[in-house]
Length: 239
Image (cartoon, rainbow, N blue to C red):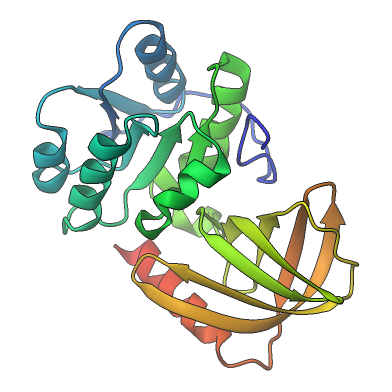
């Protein structure tokens, strides 16, 4: 996978956002250079990092955060924190960043809706690119953010093949995915996936673009099942 998971998002200039009530990102269990890098990157975009080193699951269940950053290497601890966040009324839609691991590791936690990943070794340029790409969702500037970065397993059938992919971004009109399979632009496909509180959805689509190890699928506007995705996205942005 690419080091900056959300590279398909449109870039924008780096700047510090002045806000009366800054969005907060919980940095769970980080110290030393990793903590310093994460702190610098989030603060550059007007997001205040908050060290969370004791009782992280309790804090994520009770205390409001707009984002949460945790290590996927600490599987059991990370899962308990994500479970606490997603079951919390305040943090059920917070942006979750995983640190380290592969797409397969992230798929283990796909039911919690990991939004993006920092890949190790942590490198400042790639980290800034990822935070810049996802900051609007963290800052709740939804009118300018029409795509949701989220990682979940996707099944794709069509063009004479069947493939398992990993979602990158989701919108009410389609999605982008990572996959090693090569699908032809214009190919009709059937895709299947689940998203946190959204039960598994099957929807028809067409491959709108194809790049090495990634592709875009546009949902069939005549397939009413796509409305389930739109409803989920609307609910995600309203919370």
